[in-house]
Length: 391
Ligand code: PMP
Image (spheres, rainbow, N blue to C red):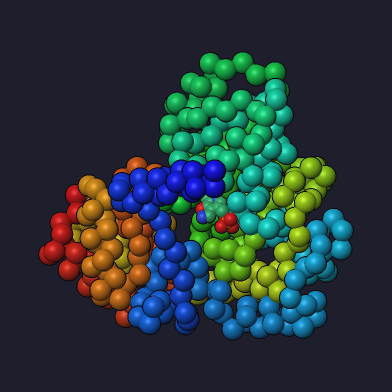
């Protein structure tokens, strides 16, 4: 019997290989800011979400070390038992100030947050309207909830309004969107979404994983659009990207946060984040709030890369953020391009279906990239154009 079981998985893996979508993991041996070493070779990393380079900031690292000395390596229990520390509470207070909300709670990862908070929010009689390009963790969160799911076309407010009007709902309406779409780098039309939510008395749940630390002078997408605080808006975000640590948070009205503490399964039934992770996130958020030079550097780097893309007529998306995809006609071209980058010491793996419809190299820019790093990337773009003309 066991032979048969293994044959099933061997076949599945073989199929992925044949379709050129087999995934593997490349762990690094060392890292110094954006320089990484994998299998003895050095690269400049253009694939991390450390948009501000804060995971390497000396103050952030020191905060983690001090917290380990004070509280040890692991949290040892769920937050609802004895896993929390005074540092967790301090971070939540700071996040309220950062996002301008009444209350907040941290969760163990962005994936855990979306798959725990969305089912906690939505019941059988509710309807969730979800953007078709929302992150996998939102898709899974919606699946886990008992609500009816309606997918609207990507960032298409006419389609959303039409679908809302067509649907009768006895329960709550909840609209869920990424603020910055993780594979395309475009920004959701939050102003319009907010207006729709107001007129429909719907909850707006935003995933600001890639907007936090990047948009709105670091405060995120809500601030980017200068939208007012509203108790029906729930702002989820991660501590693992621009904040350079690990974990996630949700900010919003106190009543929602109290409900999440009492019903979000990924919060109740999982060990709390270690104090070191929390302390480093706290130090990062403080830096983002107080030192605007880092964000300025990020946007300068983005501008340089976008200018090169425009000059070379490389095909990209409607990106407005540090996520800059280079699009290709097929998986083979994207893989070849990734190899060209690889040979030049640029680390930017190809992203292939089913993760995205159109194969691409998803380049991510950081304030941690030096001027030389950006020049190297532009040189790689030039070589790419000579050797392989993308679409
Ligand atoms: N939401 C979005 C939009 C993301 O891009 C990601 C991760 N890439 C997550 C949630 C999950 O966050 P985490 O990595 O902290 O689990």
